[in-house]
Length: 411
Ligand SMILES: Cc1cc2nc3c(=O)[nH]c(=O)nc-3n(C[C@H](O)[C@H](O)[C@H](O)COP(=O)(O)OP(=O)(O)OC[C@H]3O[C@@H](n4cnc5c(N)ncnc54)[C@H](O)[C@@H]3O)c2cc1C
Image 1: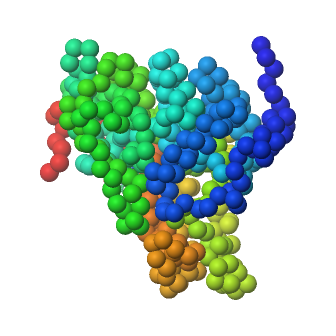
Image 2 (image 1 turned 90 degrees about the vertical axis):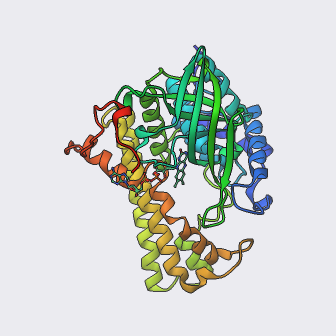
């Protein structure tokens, strides 16, 4: 057995490699438009290839699937060292933090080797096809169907709110394969090529102008039996792992995220930056508002570290990731609110290309609700925390234990 490199030695090696091989953020012009730009995705793939060639990609993924098989402490050291360098940040979510670990948990050897390996090399991007136009909170009640046809599966239905699907090669797609059993028991997870014949994908423009989301329609999309991730009709177990990874990542607990800072997207301008831009950092009222944000962020960071450790040691169940997800929403919404409050009417200045710091606070506020919906809504997180962690009575559900085909749907 080869000895694992110490975190300190890894850190020093990373520091030296980054200085020679990765561009410094200060030397890279900010993207012309928001983060959904296709050029940025090509750039992210290029940067990921550089990390792979340099031996710094997939730090916590097992070596047999192309990773380095190192610990979260090695990843944290690399992330600290990479601050100030251009990093392939768009690949963190959902590819590395959500989809790849789900495949690692539930996929076949081929799926793990092929999909995780290709993502780590920078060759492929992954996305999630979970939510449907009929609603995302009741994920187990989805109606996209997959019917067996000999050795293949034929999928029909629609998905929506798929983050950056336009830039992805493969999607983890949850579909109903059995209508004769209660809703959680008749689902199967598939790995679907996003450009498979029969997939129609549209980009969805949001109120802040971003085209990050996509919607997909499936018309007789044929997938081989090898596309099944986990067990046939066992898709809920796979989806549960996926949601765990998503909530964990949103709360800052994922060991698979590499790098922490870019030029900053349209929606990521914080209260302190707005105060500084308006030269109001000395105003006692503004300081109080900035302080509120910093206080909650500090509490969230420390709680996140504590909960992550407790999940890893088994002291808390994986469903405790809902605590992280809830905290993330609280922090991001408070920051959006505070930024807008400090910016005041100047949040309305600027244009789409050059909104300025205060204009960014205004645009960021338009996406305020996103923080309480992505990865499952805050209300659903509160339900999970009350039912699964605190042992409170379960929410009434008329469809529990009822074969799905008998469940009344729609109007
Ligand atoms: C930033 C972002 C990224 C996303 N990325 C993806 C992605 O990549 N792939 C994907 O598949 N989806 C994605 N989504 C969709 C997301 O998973 C859904 O928005 C979410 O699950 C909620 O579903 P919905 O929007 O259909 O709301 P609904 O399910 O229609 O819910 C509407 C409201 O009712 C509340 N509600 C519903 N049921 C209950 C209940 N039982 N108890 C209490 N309150 C309830 C909800 O909390 C919500 O406030 C993303 C969303 C966002 C905002």
